[in-house]
Image 1 (tube, rainbow, N blue to C red):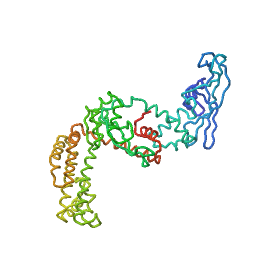
Image 2: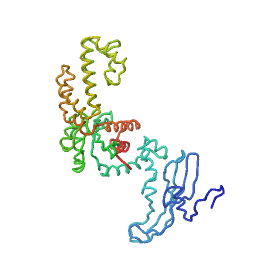
Image 3: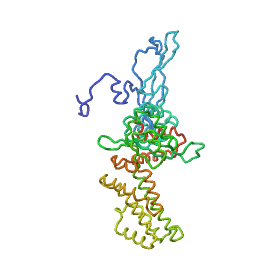
Image 4: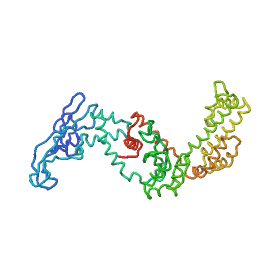
Length: 439
């Protein structure tokens, strides 16, 4: 059969709800009328007639007509959508039943006393998770206030947060601190939050980092208490624990994750080397000129070159570096510090981890004896973290890079809202944005 345009016609059906499933996308709900205005699409809906028994006593209830409920649905083609639901009402005829009047409930359409449809809540959560949306922006699209939108979204996020299965299968764990506000700690609590990130790789070796939780404070207690709360099964499954060089987190790992291998993050180790070079440059600058770096000073002109990898410098830049070092015999200390930092980078960049570990062990054996105090201090720090430093080369180059990537996502989401006042709301939003809550 074909229609007036010559195209095959849709199969005929006598069930109005079947047609409405296609048009509205809500099973068991039929469309009665549609009215379109410039910025509003009003759809009147209802459910088919059926016998209804009293929820308490089961006696067949008498119909008491309908009432109109205005529901906010997913926007369409730039217009707000309102569902005008003709909700059925019944009265229990049993005089001994305490129920009295009651109304029909369609969980697939809307919560018992909600004004935002279930579908709109799912759409809003997806917008928050994937499109960097804000609650205020979603409220404008739905035609509701901020509080109304968040009151509808928050229970679903809390339900996902309470699902302990989201912690299953974690074998590699990262930890890092995060600043969530810059206000008065006496009013808003600690500025720092400790974030735990799942760094487990899939069967193809790919990393899909996701935020597991945010807890107040930056201390051994904050991390250890969270690990204790996860239970023995979770802790025994952790094989690798990546961290930045902070003793509090390392102590928590030693106490709670005795079977896990602690790995010092490569980025932060290289950063320590770069900072040592910069400290040497500033000290020599003061000793030789009596002032901070100024335009025209040899060491001031190469401060950026000293932060780059030697393999990335052009011949012109290498010549500038050599000229600055040769300008004064005291500058030789800066060059030695720079070479030490390059050796540290080379250990991590070695194609063969066995060769990289050999370079790292040489660094541990020599840096602490260097006559340059900043490099000697770096050497002592690395010796203190010896096992965690060398673990990078025996754990398939495990690192905290995924944790830093999650931190970037969290920072983006925080800026979108221009800051947060409620830490619980902040935690739920960040878990959603960074993959901790998967609808």
